[in-house]
Length: 275
Image (cartoon, rainbow, N blue to C red; front, side, top):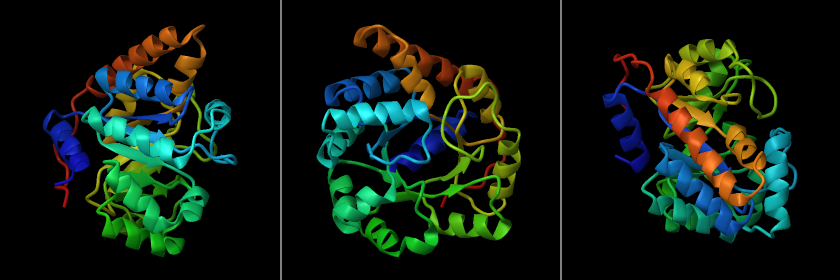
């Protein structure tokens, strides 16, 4: 059983959802991003998505775009992303990379997978890569025993959901809304339907992302999803502070609030066993 599978199994035993937090490598600096990730884990984040900064983040909203631009201005490279993955793994939390496909393709799928495995990474989320175009990546991740996470969306047909689920491992990412990332005042009502449609196609955990910004929303999503994914809210919490120390404190406080949220309500006990 992989480290990530162990985390989902432990959360299931506690009748709660898993909390997954995103932070770009190199934001606001390399050391700063590691400090933020460490405080996220210390305050209840179970799995960390390490963002790979990319110059054309079309699927990200303004908050993450700002963070990514600052990371790029710091000169963040793939080697820095792997350093951040290594530091994340050292906390005991599974470390995923969230990346657009272009940087991986330029680096070479096999080499990227090898580097991620060497850094102690667990897998990768590729939001703009479709299973039909993922042949080399699927071979590389199989070779290096990495989980690959693809996305389903409210617009996904039953056939599409089946295809994504067959190609995925670790968990399936359910994007709760159509559009870019960002915090919202409420989570889309389409998220619950999407999770239920996806659950019928796979025994894998299903995690909901896009829009969760506080503990109350996390508790709402945790009633029906296996994991709650939060990204923009962590960046916003840091950005609203006047200095880095206060920013780290704010990110830790948000993580604690979200962690309480995913633990707030009893989870359904009937869950298919993970393979």
